[in-house]
Length: 130
Image (tube, rainbow, N blue to C red; front, side):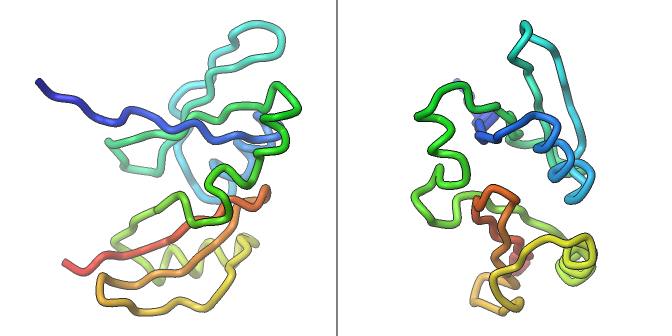
């Protein structure tokens, strides 16, 4: 038996705003954008070159979901974007206006810096040691 984690839902206030940040600003690939009725879309994105888990942008559809936007992981870093070109990606993201909480730092596992999406979700950009 073989299993893998296919996708993780990420609540956003608006599909197009999510695409603007993740695709236009971060450079993620749009994998699929399929209408599923008047108010719902299946919007799947992934970092460029990724063959692993994808993000499903999910527009909040209730007050409870709206309240969870930007705090899906209780204020912890909940998303981890790995790269093999840390400095290049950090510089590109910074020049694109991505909000970084700190300066890059070296940890025993590699280079890391925490950033936020426009809704407050916290991410690590990291380059792991070989």
